[in-house]
Image (cartoon, rainbow, N blue to C red; front, top):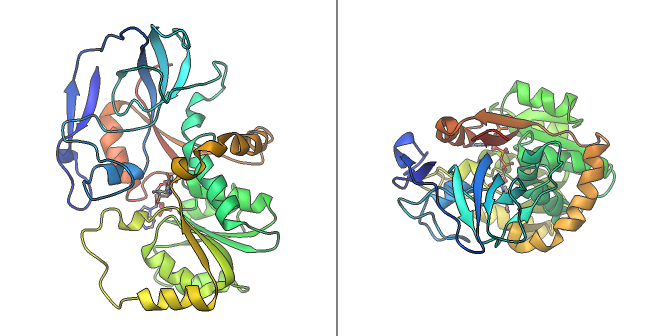
Length: 337
Ligand code: NDP
């Protein structure tokens, strides 16, 4: 039973030294429990937050504990009547091959799913995040301009495509030419701009001649600086993530833009609202899946997975996620189906 535990808390970007590779016993399920074998492990930006003991909406991972993570797992043995050996389940087994569960929080998946790992992406947490953040907080209307950052990632790629299905004009912001052409050619966005270019603010102003009605915030930092002056009256800003700041060790150097931000919110009556997907929208999963499944099946939503093979590559892939090295939803395959 290989597992990756948290060895130390990072200062700035995580490094290999912050993680420990361990071998543990395969646990034995007690009465009422199941033994799970991880097949797919989801890697997500929130894990950077769990490595830190700064106050947050969730408890940090303790030093020496296995890293947290959503998994698609196989039931290997069951002492729980609700699960049978061989079932696929959505679990939170973390970065390890085996774990036991008493069934709490386990979601049984259809055993005939063509792509079980999609339950970690387009049909799972990132999908729910994109759909609810955009539809409930962003409230896009046909003809409006929607801007989304981290535009080819797990959440952003879906936000932009859902906004297109609502009849909006969609501008993506992503890192590099390859991601940008994927956003326009495959995802169908109207334009996509490279946030690494020095003239991002000018390019964004040109791409949004009627201003921005919805900005789906995934990154913060320089990208938000470019967006803020273009927000229209009554614009909505679903505040989903601030990945450009997750490795930051200090506040950005001046000038302080807080008063500019507050004046923008006030004068333009901008609604900016943060959300934590499972806390705020976990109970609306069915509503989301009733919309997403038909779109996906009909090919109206395209989905790209960045699949990494083997636990040995998990840490490097996670470090890369915080630097934009992933192209699509990052998933690690830990073992055979
Ligand atoms: P992605 O698949 O989008 O991967 C992360 C991407 O972020 C990278 O590929 C990179 O894209 C971009 N990025 C990384 N560093 C920077 C940087 N310094 N500046 C700008 N962009 C950067 O991840 P997810 O779709 O899983 O997550 C997207 C956001 O949504 C994150 O902020 C995450 O925390 C948040 N989130 C929030 C949830 C909630 O409940 N509020 C739930 C799920 C996700 P590129 O190369 O294009 O720059």
